[in-house]
Length: 190
Image (cartoon, rainbow, N blue to C red; front, top):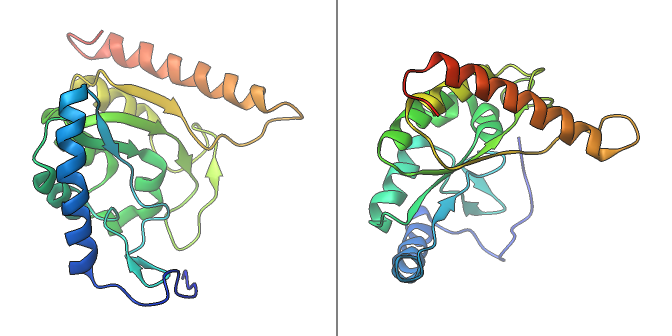
């Protein structure tokens, strides 16, 4: 349970937040299209429906679909944080693999934050990619199956020994191994 005092001196309705999102994203999308920029919407972290009196839009699969429909632009898509998706578990309405398939097949998947957690809400701990409850090989393989050509980056890497670079090197090496295996198993992957 996340309870915080009001962050903006009052409660906001879902409709107010959706109206503000629509106002902003329609204008931002036009500029993104003109400038050749991709806007990847990151999920709420943690993916809970309200925080500090404000509805959080990006905590369900259906809300993501609604947001992309409102944007109506090929330059507005998803930054799919696998860790957030795993944090939310059933709250999302679909699992991370289904989300990757849905957004990837529509060319709306721009970037992936590649991380794992030990369990879904209400309590989770960020883990190394090979040590959580998420099947990170299945994630990498599904990315290859949908022809994902965006960026997959290590995210929220636990510290290893006294040098933060060690955890990063380990994670990148593990990701590369998963990528090579997935490319070998998925026909037409590169």
